[in-house]
Image (cartoon, rainbow, N blue to C red; front, top):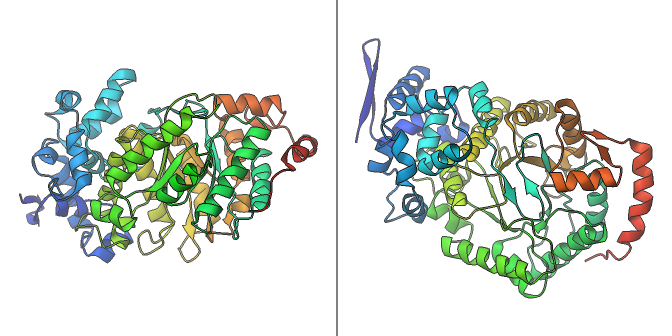
Length: 470
């Protein structure tokens, strides 16, 4: 179905819903690379105005990717809650925008609304919102998840300790963990990206993280961000898996490029939940999946089907929602300037991704980052960090000095997270906050100081003597 809009006597035509969504997107180098972006600002505005007048029901009547040929589309349509959609079924995209800005529902009503929205509807309304509006709406949405602790409670900011090591040296990983813990980080997850995706290396990493957690009685979860099949194989050899990780995308073809399927994700979730029941752990909840995404992943895999990168990102969140994860995050600037060119595009995409994930009901975090050849710097990251903290982001990354020595990219540091907590009065996850205060690492949203940190370290180090190099 074609769409059009007239501006000052000049008619702009859009061949189908995919084209309309793409032309209405804010400038992204990835959409330009794909040849689907608006040709100029007038065409972009015309697309936004045509999109604003579009009934939400159009997205159900005209799928942008056929469910019979794409299993992400199929699962999105199969899980759509028509009862939850009914109260907003008569709205246009523009009217949904006004509804969210003026009368954002609360509690159970909000949860019902989330289940009635498809990813494409959320992507569409995102394209009509200014940055400040993405922040204002997202800040009112609290999506809580539970594993070994609780994430997403109002007034909290979680931090993933990301203690990567270029040779998967477990002693080095443990040292980086201590660095993060003494800065109040680690409540989201202690999650390592392995340099080597082997069963032996992944098993050693998982066991070393578990050793740190158990030795210090930390109420948090561990994860090794290897391929899902490697993690499951390590788990079968008695490696402890708290969260099962996988990168996912917004089309079946993208996920196939990652070496995964929906069936594999579902089976993996079932296996890790069964694994949880065999361990003597005080589980707070049964969310056990961790997903990472990023605008541009489908284009980089030549699996975008002519769909813009923002809409594909929303579809990845729609897939994630069906698997009830504990953590989801957009690695917003990691894929590179071919997809998000500079600070302006990275900041916009970070706010978009966080908003879309929140509106779709996910416990949403953001890896606020850029690659070294992007037109951005650490001031760019500071800007996005402060915006997302005010938007109520569930968690961010914590890396020593903000420079990941294994992945070779720039992200937020333990110090950045501590500063934002102090500035905005934010605390850690409640169970983790209790642990921090009991160990006199933090009091409220403030660190107890370097002198106390040295004392804590002296007490911690003997407990970790059994941490061996893999």
